[in-house]
Amino acid sequence: MSKLLRLVLLLVLLAGSGIAARPAQAAPPTGCQTGVFADTGALWMICIPKIWNGSLVVYAHGYTAYNEPLDFQHLELPDGTYLPDVITSLGFAFTTTSYRANGLVALDAVEDIAQLTQFFPTYAGRAPRYTYVSGVSEGGLVTTLSIERHPELYSGGLATCGPIGDFKRQMDYMADYRTLFDYFFPGVLPGSPVSIPQDAIDNWDAVYEPAVEAAVAGDTTAAKQLIRTAKAAIDPAVPDTLVTTSTDVLWYNVYATNDAVTKLGGNPYGNKGKWYWGSSNDVKLNRNVQRFTADQAALDALANYQTSGSLTKPLVTLHTTGDDVVPYWHEALYQQKAGAYDSGQLTQIPVFSYGHCNFTTGQALAAFGILVLKVTGSQPAGLPMYFSPEQVQADAARAQAEYGQ
Image: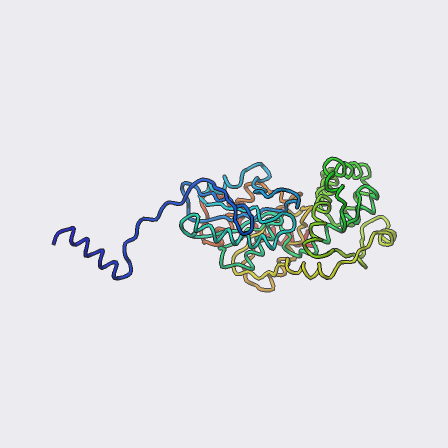
């Protein structure tokens, strides 16, 4: 029998057995490409390295003001490292989305991230072996909700500095800060903690942020009382953080309040009966501070933003203990939620420093390395392993005791 005939017979047998020879799989497109989802208007970006390890990182960006154009946000780490470059240099594919809108968008963002994850195999020509979802700030909440609500899509998640413990309490923290600021520094900001005039938004950078800076720097006694009563973080060794914390938190009050009221169907903030303490005269403070009542419709809507702590896939969190915007107590609250399920899927990594999402590139990559290790059982090549399991456990316990209010 000739070689040609034997080959023909072999192909016939393979076809009949259902395991017919198939053409070689096309290589996925390399480099970065962008596009838009027609149904939502959300922008997408996909980057695939020339030597792809077969795994994917899906990135959820942080809070962006409602009046900004849709774009790819927060792709630079604090030291200027460009996130798509560092992820692809490690052999992972990288993808992110603008989301369909800005402002308070966490619930829609969970679905936008899911759509992006499901689109990737069509774009790349094959499904990734492992899919890691990761996000920063509001994106940390998106990451956590994604792991809880769509575990079938992801191998694991890395949530950094996210409001994952109690989203209502997060919103109360920001509104409380504005309420207390208005008490200690009356007349500096227009409007109220629950209603922001357009002038404050339009002229924040030019007028009102400098006014806040001047007021806080000019009366450090009042500023320290503000920090104590709001239970906000500063760096005691750096006096300027009195100003930084105030401008950081009040930026969110100015830009996020009206958008949240619109999307939640009412005002979510109420402080009737709340007792503030830490001032030089708490009785006077509580007698004279402004009081507000939350709308029930907004409170009902807020329930959808709450995490459950129910984890069936590994979740690693990374959070600075001195986070002035999203306080570290979120980690303590989430640990309590996850602990009720006792799934063993949660790993918390505190970073003992001041500032919102103030990590080094090495720390962020080391946290990602722990996630990969938890998912695959193998230490990932090229990722720093700064945090031993023993150190992580000890640091988490120390942070819970010192910063978990």
